[in-house]
Image 1: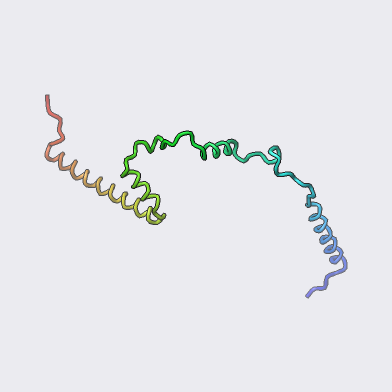
Image 2 (image 1 turned 135 degrees about the vertical axis):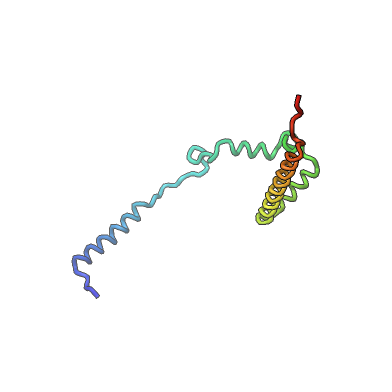
Length: 124
């Protein structure tokens, strides 16, 4: 083990003192009043007004997009909303597989129609 020289001891003690002075120089004793709107402005302007208006709606009518929904559609939305993430992903994969199968079936039917000359335009 090395012996620390007197010069290194002085350097270490100076560094410790500088570190302590640095930490004390960072302290702030200023008291801030958080109630002041000038010092602490609203994070997102208009959010407070929106929240107040949302709690007290003018009318009780449903949104425009819900007006066109039938009861079956609303039940489907409630069912999908209650699914966990994994169940929802499984449902989406099932829908993708169904869409793929429908695409294959449509392709077969179009090919069949082409061979049977069903899709030809009548000659004038």
